[in-house]
Amino acid sequence: MADMSIADKFLRDGRVKLLAARLGWSRRETMGALLDVFAAAYDRAADILSSDDIDTAAELAGFCAAMIAVDLAVHTTVGVRIRGATARVLPRKKRSSSGTAPSLRPMPKDWAPRPQEQAQARAAGIDCEKTAEHFRDHHTAKGSRFMDWNAAFRTWLRNTTRFGGSPHGPGRRTPLDLQLERVAMLEDEERKR
Image (tube, rainbow, N blue to C red; front, side):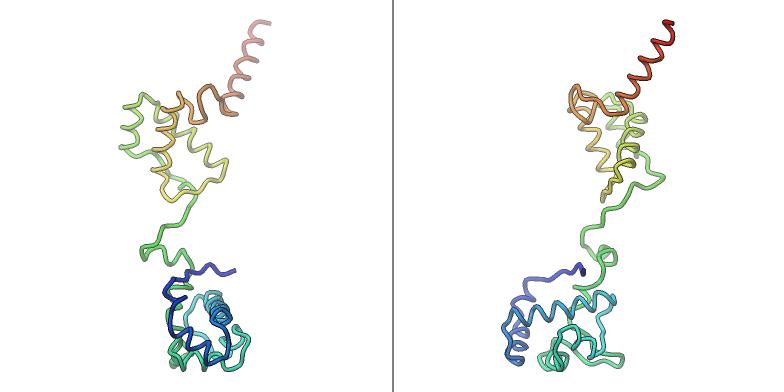
C-alpha cells in the first residue's frame, strides 16, 4: 500500500473539478482514480508514467488524455509527467531530507551518551555508564526505534531521577534486577552450605 501525502489544496484544486466534469464523474470518484494513479507512480518511485499505465491505474481508457487536457499531467519525451506527484509519491525515507520529520531508526551500534548527557547524569547523581548500559540493553531487547536516541536517553535519565532510581517506577524492579537478586540469593545459600 502506498504511503502518500495528499495536501488539502489538492482536494480543492479546480482542475480536479474540471476533470470530474470532463469524465462525467463525481469529484470523489475522480479523486479516487487520481489516488490510484498516484499509487502507481509511488510503486515506481517516479512521477513519469506511460499513458497506458495511467489509464490502467484509473481503470478508464482516456483518463490520461483527460488529465493532460485539464493540466494535471503533461507529455514529456519519456512519458507523461503527473503534476505534483513528486511531492506526493516519493518514499518517506527520500523525503525526510526535504524538511519532513526524520524517520524512526534503531539504536546505532556505536551509540554512547554524549558529554551533555553525561553531565546531566552526573548532576542528578546517576551512574551514567551503568544507566546507559541498562538503556542500551532495554531498547535493544525491545527493538525500539527513535528519531533521536540522545533525546530518548535524556528522557530515560529524567525518569530515573523522577521514579527513584529506576525508569520503571518507584519500588518496581526490572527483570534484570529480579534475576540479579535471584543469583545473589542463590550465591548466599551456596556459601551457607
